[in-house]
Length: 380
Image 1 (tube, rainbow, N blue to C red):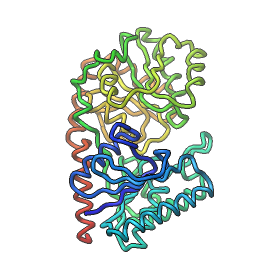
Image 2 (cartoon, helix red, strand yellow):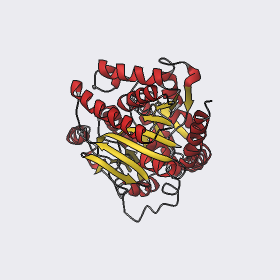
Image 3 (cartoon, rainbow, N blue to C red):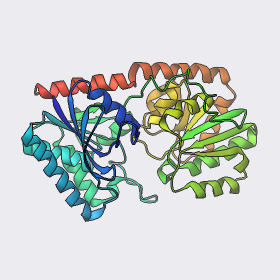
Image 4 (tube, rainbow, N blue to C red):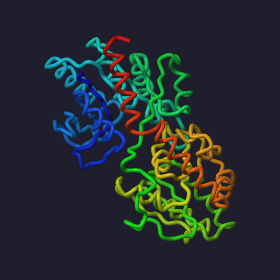
């Protein structure tokens, strides 16, 4: 089959991770079908190239916003239609339901082809106090509405986002297909000594995320301040970069925990397994996640995650620990409970790894998507 995948951004080469989970997914899908990727905003150039056998057309839209995004969408739709005239597509798949989903649904309607749309981010939420979520924008709301109406199937990556989606579409068009983790890269035998990623602290907490308001590292630091008072041998390691770098460092100083927190900055994706394996416990503090791949990456490395009840974490059951969003004392209490139970941490880590192998691997995702594509091609 010839499948058109539409994305906000995609790798500029096989060496560019961009969105690692999507790069891995397309690499595997291209083994079975002819994949044509249309990427709207990244890389920051226009033109065609190939990655792992998939043909890619980039539009270099960058940070184009507001009404200025419509010429970008127009160029993309024209290119999709042009490619379809050269050789028809069997279906379209929009990864993210705003611009990509809109284009997939529109192209599918114009060409009489079925469409899949995946909810992968903040499409269904609006958090005005931090300016996060596509529901804050009238244009985005309209694009998402068109995408969801036009899709034959809408995929979700967690029960959390599945429930949100039911407020917008009928449940019989929703299907759970979490993005899977690469078990060849993420596994418990990854050598934590190789990169010496985590040194400080007898008990090492790890948080991997961009430093952005929706990740709510402020609550994380307040929670860790409570932990550090009770367990001074603990140390928090934060891996990621973003606009809140200076603010969060200042907050750590103000809370008196600067010597107990290390900001590592960004780490190459293929170094992350060493970070997870060097940690005793992983922590998620986000206000919203459609899935949270870091939770599955940690689980694949047999590490337990304690965190807010968003994304995939609640789906892991006893293999993870959830707390309310923004509740620093509850997060601290959950962390300290597992700090004092090393045997339980190991047992839960093995349970988490088993769940990933059974339900959340890259191979499982690819197999499920291929079956969905086959059903659509048969008109089912």
